Length: 68
Image (cartoon, rainbow, N blue to C red; front, side, top):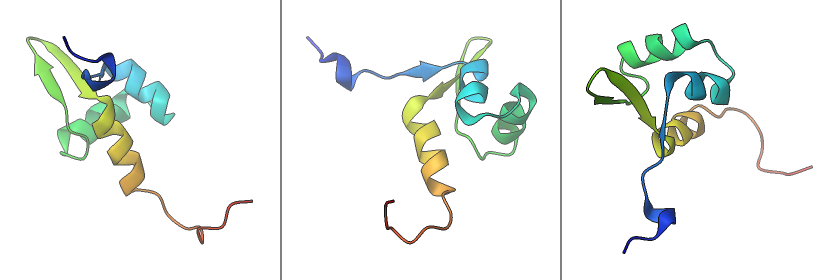
């Protein structure tokens, strides 16, 4: 039996757009240029939550590590 925390969490295009506060078209554009990894399941496009989180982490800028 697998632990639910180890299961893959897949997101739809609208879910990723909402999560990143960008348009659906921008999600497709990031996918098309290879910036955002995706999974094709038949005609559906899905995104691994871990990949989306990594995408955000890679783009963090500024800050000095001090929390306020």
